[in-house]
Image (cartoon, each protein chain N blue to C red):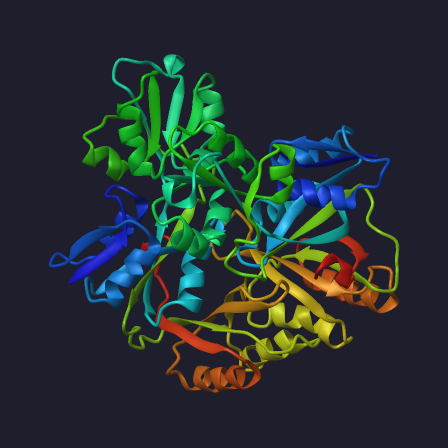
Amino acid sequence: MRIAYLGPRGTYSEEAALRHASRASETVPFGTIAAVIEAVENGAADQAVVPIENSLEGAVTHTTDLLIHSTDLLIRREIVLPIHHCLLVQTGFGLPLVRVVYSHPQALAQCRGYIAEHLPEAEPVASLSTAGAVKDMGSSARPAAAVTSRRAAEIFGAKIFDHNIEDSASNKTRFVVLARDDAERTGRDKTTICFDFTEDAAGTLHGTLGELATRGINMLKIESRPDKRSLGRYIFLVDIEGHREDGVVREALRGVRDRAALFRVLGSYPRPGNSDGS
Amino acid sequence: MRIAYLGPRGTYSEEAALRHASRASETVPFGTIAAVIEAVENGAADQAVVPIENSLEGAVTHTTDLLIHSTDLLIRREIVLPIHHCLLVQTGFGLPLVRVVYSHPQALAQCRGYIAEHLPEAEPVASLSTAGAVKDMGSSARPAAAVTSRRAAEIFGAKIFDHNIEDSASNKTRFVVLARDDAERTGRDKTTICFDFTEDAAGTLHGTLGELATRGINMLKIESRPDKRSLGRYIFLVDIEGHREDGVVREALRGVRDRAALFRVLGSYPRPGNSDGS
């Protein structure tokens, strides 16, 4: 099986793809989230692994918007990855000499406190990815450091100067695995749906959520995205407990569909166990 | 009165600040959204104008997170600005010769179709702002163009090559004006609140929205943001019709507060008229 992911090699997306892959699988990097999804649509890969949410930054809206507007692929698994950043330093320099620190802007933001304390003289400079930061450090004219994943350090054979340098211990990213089919019923599942309304009268969303609440179906997450046509109109993305083939869920989804304009099931898939760090 | 906004001069944020300003006001640019808000907190300015939502991109999460977590300033007005991009071209070159086009990444994305059609040979390159794109064009070694606001073109004395080059005619940004006090009751108001829950039992959000729906209070917008402590826990940001001093709204807000853990009113302010383009 071929698994497409957001490259380059050494990113957290590759870590998620490797966690998903079996021994017989091949993981293949693509340059954008849209290209990862297209790879499955045009048969270049069987499954796609894309980030959908971070515990500090919120939704990866590029992914949610592609799921809502641009693809028929379904979510068949979710993978929650704890995000631990490492510090690399150019050979021959101690921390006080470092004048520039490279990483993806989000990783730099997540280590802001550590950098202020340990690299007070270093200017933070954006790289295209945490893996790209290792290359940028290598070609830097000034004494440089990089914030990156342990996996990227291993790939580039770089020595890790410090581990777990992120400011918040609760930094996690949720990835979803997309394919032509979602997952079979396991008895401990969740389902992602999206819907919108033609009119925004008082109580429209309230009544729709009532289709879930009155049946005792737990809502795990709700998010609103602009419908891209007019300001103030939204598409709702909701995660609920249960599989779309469970009797009570099927009934509730019928109720939601009847109240909605757009309605789509984006997939049913197992809820992650504690082993996934969720 | 001094009005702080997200600079530099020539950005859409300055346009929103100028629309808000009276003749006696002075508008002052700051480098980040956090700095704009701090300027009011520390008395360097009286009011702050910050972007909060775009009709294509969704919430400006940096602003919403600051409102939820980091400031006691209140929303006292909203301003909806239609976003129209202009094309500037380096003097002496026609479109077919242009090899690079500068702008803020969001503006480049919003004109993707136009650029593909009219500047097929040009490489899109990111600038720090739409105003900064004009400078980047000026110092480009290759024949260059810039996507920017009409105001920035005027400030830099640049000739506008083409108007309204955005792909979607419904591109609007909503700005909010922040101050120590929110607005007086006008009879046609809206109120922004945020809240979260200690437990996520089925129906918690549904019951809370019921406090609004059963009183016939229209919900204009709902958004969820990560609580930044654990993945899967959210803070809800809700816009409703009415002023927090309206009797029925006051009653509903008391009901919401009783069900919530965190609860805050982020301000009551007039709903924009059609003159604001909303």
